[in-house]
Image: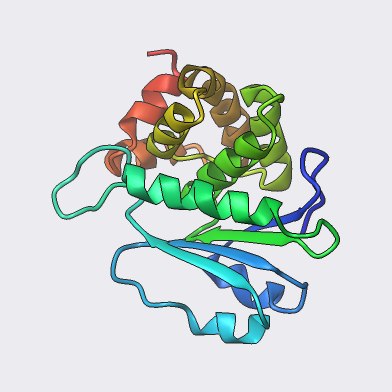
Length: 195
């Protein structure tokens, strides 16, 4: 759990394996992002009363046979959920965002929620805050492109992503970029490399 200097609500970002460790921290909102077909995780029964949005899509940035990339409808759901969080009293508002590893889909969603709540802050400021909360953050480019478009900030976020990716590489093994290339994330690697 982390307090953010950008928003009044607390934020937790994690992967599936970390969820059980957060059941007693007073989460008011859960954004659960997993692969298509995954059922609701039983761990949430131990979370007490909370608002939850379950969205399902694969962690890719291109159309890939057999994979369901994030779509505009998913991003609109995420932004709508973020608006509902802003209506919660600050003292009790605590957002937990998770995906499989708490690295890509979840951090992209958190970036958009923060950007929507703080249109006065630069994309760089927001991505630095995301990296402070989740140092290994590697936000999904496709999600940020679509959400950035909806918020009128697409080019600003795309321009700020190479810096965020560069900061994240310190938390990943040397073959991380090869892994991304092999898993339909080459556009992110090219963006990092200035291409």
